Image 1 (tube, rainbow, N blue to C red):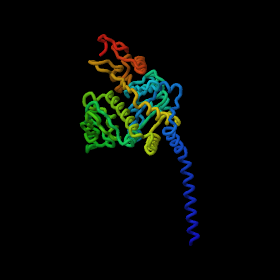
Image 2: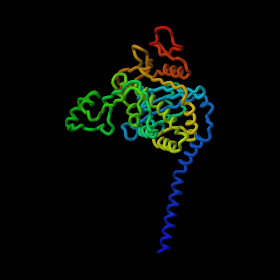
Image 3: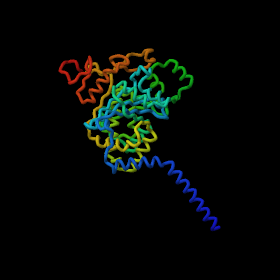
Image 4: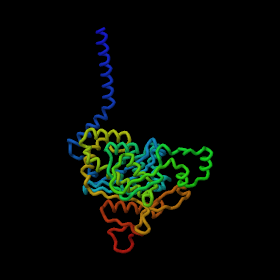
Length: 382
């Protein structure tokens, strides 16, 4: 009986040993990556950049819905970030998702989704953004909504200074997109055959929507609240535009960066491992794992640098000009609501000029006839 017990113990230890070896084999690369990142951030303080990166480089940031959403790979957020290492400056340009791309015969928010099916999502994003902005895209980072929520929650929330109160009475409730709201199938069929505007959907299916309210001033938000803040599309007044969404997205990016470094994430192995795992599972990028620790250190170095935000929009006919315009619904744009450059469909020359001007640090003004710098004294600017 004793021998049998010893044999059983040896058998259990043998099985445990085999399982441990398997686990080590499975997680060897991940463990090696984590140790490399942690060592690079906490001990090796040198920032190893290429010659170009020591001057400046560009990162494209995309936010997508992810597996649980309709159109999971459509880009809800598109931002070009220029990182000027030498001057300690960051310039962020928000590109509206409704911008029409003639060559692809679709809106820019579909570029990554369409190309990903062919296995070249990131390279297609690089090519299109380079065509629009005139800037070489060095890196692309695509994060889905689940990853965003988990990341903000892992940081224990973020603090956002909201410029003006946001009231959106038609924010869609996740999971209730197809709810009948106690309507019969026959009633729904009749309504669907006659409905022509989203406003009618709000009225007919009230249970699918909720009132999203965010006060002006400093707000502490968890991941879900931050996501709703940046995704809201039907806010009252000025907050109802896609351009207002772009500005809110930039606010959240800045707040996330501030919180990450105020918490000392890079010096906390538990936090660091958590961030690494969240990003690894919810991100698509062409940033090599060997560069992660250098980019973390670089972000820390730049955290007190000058950050300026820009949004491509239609402007305001009373106060200022914009770079884009809405051409109207037509077959040319597949009957979609789109935006095109004010100089004409596919003519991105003025956008390129404006981006270049801003990156060079000039005072770039959008005038009636073009980009003006330095600021003019005439009445052309508004």
